Amino acid sequence: MQAVFPEDRRWWWAVLAAGIIAGLLALSAQGSILFLMATLAALLLLIVLILGWPFSGVVLLIVSALLTRFRFDLGPITVRPEHIAAVTVAIMGFGQLAIERRPLRMPAAAWFALLWWGINLFSGLAFDPNPRMGLQNALRIFLLALTFILLVNLIPDRTWWRRAVAVFLAAGALEAAFGIFARGVYPFGVNLGVQVSWNFTEPIPYGTFEEGNLFGSHAASWAIILLMVIFAAERVHDSRKRQLLRMAGLGIVLAALLLSLSRAAWIMFLAGAMLVVIFEYRNAWAQANRFVLALVAAPLLAFGLLSIAPYLPASLPFVNRLQSFLNLGFDATFSARLSDWSMALQDWLQHPLTGWGPGSFFALHGMLRAHPAWISNLSVRLLQETGIFGVIAFGGFVATLLLPAIKTVRGEIDLLDRGILLGMIISYAVLLGLAYQSTDGIWLTASWVHAGLIATGTRVLSQTS
Image (cartoon, rainbow, N blue to C red; front, side, top):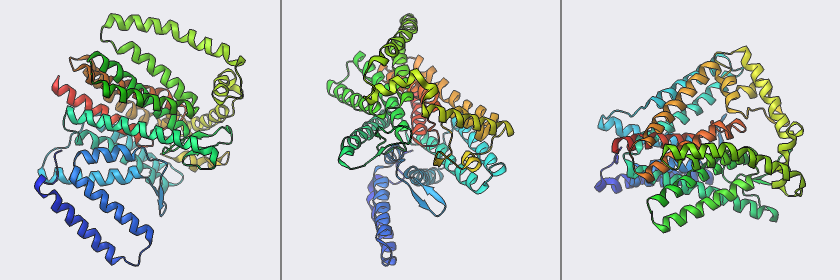
């Protein structure tokens, strides 16, 4: 997509938009301060979108995906910044396509995403004990697929794709830095984004994310991408200044990962870093050698860490979490999750093909351990909510997203572009395959933004190779 409004007329459109909203403000002069602030924010957002389109739409989708902690209720519906961003960008983007009569880019992964949403919609209406909530949750899932489709259509070429990935990583580093800052000021009685749970009393930062495990999982994801990009940039002798910025960003997200105390995120990063070391070199023989080395070294490293863990001071929270691997059967978090997964699988057996619908676990089980019931495992959640059909559809989405991307990476493309795309492939794969098997985040937009950048990178790099 190019600019919706011609360059020489964008200011006129922005002024017109400002005039319309100013008129609405005048008509609602008796309204609340909150309404006034929301309207002014909408005015600023609209002007920025018009002046910076289409990249402003990309930035809005990326940044809003990292603000999942902030939400408000609009009647019975919970609205997050990512929902507002998706709807706003969609109105402008689809309006432009209609005016210019240009087709929508719809890769195979987009059709599988819509199919998965359709199964969610059907299951929610047909089997959810509360069909109204099933419909609302299905609409939220539609916005996830919509965000993916918008990113595929908003980024036109390789240059803009690189910039979009840079924004994604920079926003991630800022999110991680905010979480670190929140943890730093928490002992002084200021809570900017720190949680203390019933089963683990150590303060865990979550920054602007929904909760601490997701904060750690996505910090690990950004760290894996940055690690791969740093290796690739060294091979092409990229700017030293940019390398220093990448290393600083890597240090920030690694610190956030450590503070998250998320065991799944730690495992995810170690697995992802191992894959980066294996595949950052293009030679197949070198990759095979490194793979064999990793097969030997990884178990030895795990055995060594777990062997010395009992002799380290358990008063340190990091050591305490490491020691918990030795007694998972007695770990409160692990036991609670096993119990939830067992109930979810029992639910699935009643509707094995279609599941019960999105969010139905709460409708079926209410409150568990003083919190709304939810399923923390992606695989179990897919089965319980969408059944076998949903697992097949979501599996089709992942396959049609990653397999073309892997094929592109294996082609003759720029080494830095290869590093960026390969890092995103690896981080996305371990995010779904490891971290989201402990704390599922597929119902939030961050992973769909990540997927959209992979699909876009596949397209633009295939065109230029």
